Amino acid sequence: MKAISLFSGGLDSILAVKIIQEQNIEVEGVYVNLGFESNKEKINYLQNMAQKLGIKLHIIDKQKEYIEKILFNPVYGYGKNMNPCIDCHAFMIKSAKELMEKTGAKFIISGEVVGQRPMSQRLPALKSVNKLSNADGLILRPLSAKLLPPTIPEIKGWVDREKLLDISGRDRKRQLELAKKYGLEGYESPAGGCLLTDINFSKRLKDYSKNLELTPDEIDILKVGRHINYNGYKIIISRKAEENPFLKNYKGNKFIKMFTKGFPGPVGLIQTDADEDSKQKAADFMVSYTKLDKGDIIIGDKIYSGSKIDKKDIQKYIV
Ligand code: SF4
Image 1 (cartoon, rainbow, N blue to C red):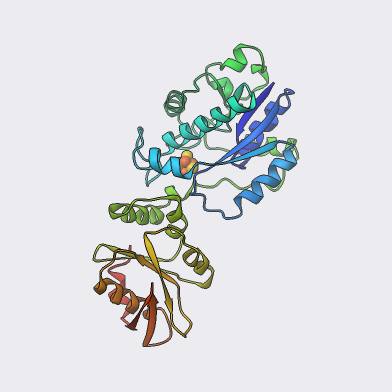
Image 2: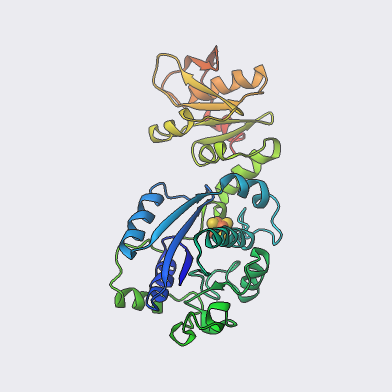
């Protein structure tokens, strides 16, 4: 008997694996990469944790499909920001179901806890997730199973329902006790959610998607830099050296790159179709974040002479 576990690497998903492994069921983990994770080291961390748990880990890249089908058109709407958590969970479960069918597993497990998150883990939300994912009856949530209707693996006796748990709410006391019992260490502390739950990231995403179509190429550049909207054109300028590679390595076709010519300064991007006035202004913005008052800025294959502007005057364009 084999189960596929949605594996975020958080304590709840680790405990869900442990509880099912204890019932002599083989578990394989799946991490669905949607692109909006804030932690850059995530994949390494997940691989290490999977190794510790003795599970095979599948990493599936679903960024494109997620953007096209879910992000801008969620059936159950958004949370506080641009986070479509109910649809997102259902999407991840659907992905896990595809893997379940491919690998010969018989059900899916998830570390969700009833009532833990305001939007996606209330009881009605879990029902919506089941319905939307088309995997109703196949999703076992070991941490809260006793508070939920029996699932197929419980009804068929593949899993002993009596050994499952009845945890609910935001208090993490029982999970921490279980972590101690299993000798778990080095797990991620519970995060508030992905970048879509972040107010500033959501503002940038909304501003970006007013005029431009999002593809996976642009996700990383939304995570860094100062974002400026000048005359309806988007300009992004790095704030520190560590952000430069994100902008330098941009591979899409919606932006062209901006560099200082012969003096230290930030790296920038400007919308490919920006007009001349906006490119000139972008050169001024670039110089404004250097130590010089004037300097040449390379934008695509042209050079613009930029002049420093007062930061207060730039502020009104910052997203
Ligand atoms: S926090 Fe982000 S990754 Fe998690 S369910 Fe919500 S939208 Fe999806």
